[in-house]
Image 1 (cartoon, rainbow, N blue to C red):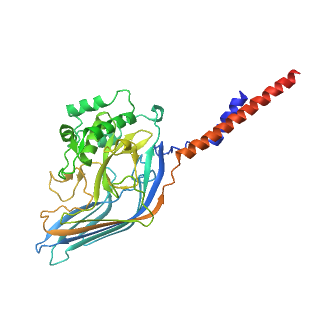
Image 2 (cartoon, rainbow, N blue to C red):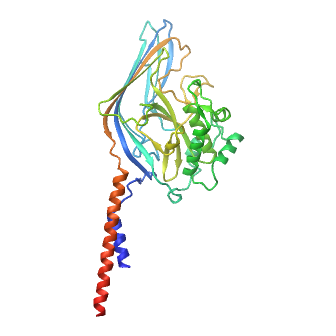
Image 3 (cartoon, helix red, strand yellow):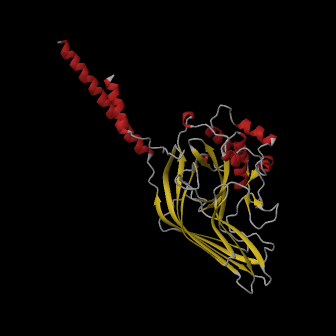
Length: 404
């Protein structure tokens, strides 16, 4: 018995924690941060009114969210995006509200201005951030790790219970599909993995779809979509299973998921009113598991059902965002634009230029090498076995000596 106790204590001493998971007091656990990149992000937007007759413009511009366990506005969120706003200047406005929060805890700057080319006709917005993006991967999650859903929590009203346009959780075809994909005994992670894999196989990606979102029912009926439809269909199938899920929108620094940026590397993106844009707008999914947290998922890639990378900048979570200045019926939009877009009557009365400069400040790609871990573990295992054998051998010799 003493031998077993000694071996157990040695194991505790040599392996004081699980290398592949992190536990948090914020209701987040079982995740690993193996890689990260810190960027400086500079945004410059110039908007010019080009008509003599005046027009009033209403702006709601999303900030790059701070999304990590210690954030004051996020909950149950691993360190996907640690954002620090260093500089924020907005000029040429009539009124300005900075740092406004919506019900999803997205942060915005709201402003409006009546412009005429015979008076002040330009609005300029400049922002600078320091942002750390991390590759977050969730490890093994067992039934015993998962808490119980509190269906009275506000997140169920926001992200689960209600049918809404483009998220038709009461569609009989979607209900039947969702129930056929999963088994009733599956835990939420298993359901998410199966649904993500099914969506990836079921839909064919199309780059020719119009910018207008189509929704889950349309995607299911047409077996077609871009990142919006992939995300919306997966979210709706998850919600049918009682799993809170939401859309995340922003833009990619690179579409090459294998890219490892280097310190000093610069990425430049531009968009303008002539219709050209090099920004890589994108949408993906997060689903919630109690005591585990919000898990990022890329439904276009079945290997990313519990993983996010360091190449995506997040602007918004949720759907159906209020737009000030718009007439009823048009005052909510399903996806928030990643390029600042005013509410106005005449959209031919202005020009704009939007420049995004992203500079790599720091990188950390020192993820544990699996082979090294296996070798070290094997050596430590042999040492422990050897110690146990020596202890047993010593006890045996002592018994033999006492017998004589």
